[in-house]
Length: 509
Image 1 (cartoon, one colour):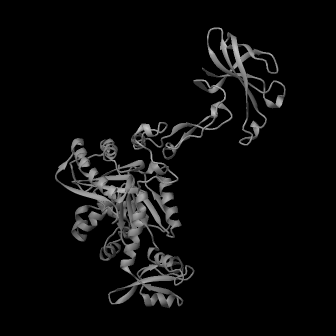
Image 2 (image 1 turned 180 degrees about the vertical axis):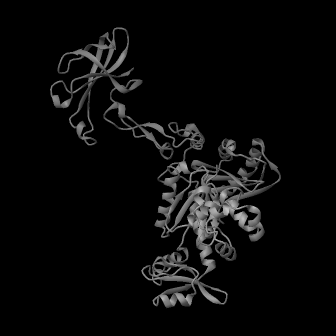
Image 3 (image 1 turned 90 degrees about the vertical axis):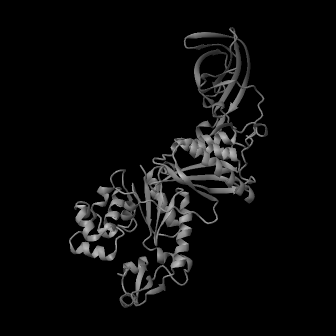
């Protein structure tokens, strides 16, 4: 099931001016944008202050000035608005690789398979609105199974979030007014005169009379919103982005054919990246099917890479996610994120050659794990400084796997097998610092032939208050049967505040 997000910015025209020219257009004064239509200037956009004063798009400019004497006005600049919307569409690629225009004041995004990256669909919608607010734009967002339904729902209210569960867009659209559909003014006026005010009223009527009276456009808009007819988006691509498009002679539908296309495109992309001195961090592979719908896969790398074999393998692993249906007629390979190949001071490049970094996992393996469906994160265990041995490991992210671990000098040997949790045992030993003579584990008595210790470890009092003054005395012991074990006692055997005096088994040599 595909999922489409629609963004509507009701104050887009005025917000663009207030952000670019704050001195000329302060936010506390009413502002309208106007354009020439039918030999008179008509309001095309209003600011929140102008809306509160009773002004709406569609009013004649002269009437708006008579209602608000201190009104600020600006003539609409279609080219500047288009350029600003293009910049915003380019910014929206962080959400998914398939953004599209909904001119003049909205955007689309095919977010199929992206919601889990942001904590679910509800969290994703909240994040989109918060980030747009941080850029200075008010917006309404909606998510449903079709782009047309999401558009109608987003434009049905100012500053709202609408999340429609899969398969329920018909129920969500039923109470909306017909003006939510992109229909001509003449058609909307005719529907109002007939008493057809909501989309539900239209959906319940026979189709043949509607088509005869209003034409095919009305049924097309209705079918696209209800999901009866596909409405493919024109995906936006930034001008400076490395992107290759290939139209195929005949539609392809087999994994081998898709792999052959990938093998033809990746070397060209890597050649362009190398010429720029850059490496890919994220690749989008878009497959346009014969019905106009798009199948998209996205892969990422843990470090900038222009390695042909590595990128081909990452894309090849994702081929099973593509559903060609009746065939794919066009493919697009895009580098949606790239960085310089040189390693920066904050992050080291992960090599594929194990000899150059013995402790780091190969970058190709990390990439394949991270791009596997269902995998959220990949970590490597690395040593870290800690007073207690059970806390002596930490999880390291891929960006830090190539960095050398923090060295710690060990004066005493450590066991080969360390238990996750120490096991309680009963030990016979002389207080305060006598070596253990024997211990009982699971009702079995083990006699100790030799013991070396104690090695005293102190708790990390700067980390937690309960560790202040905590002491452990560790012993390496060998039983009469040849077992070499690691035992410790809580406390110094004299002061109660240092520990309970209980003994534990923590590892095996």
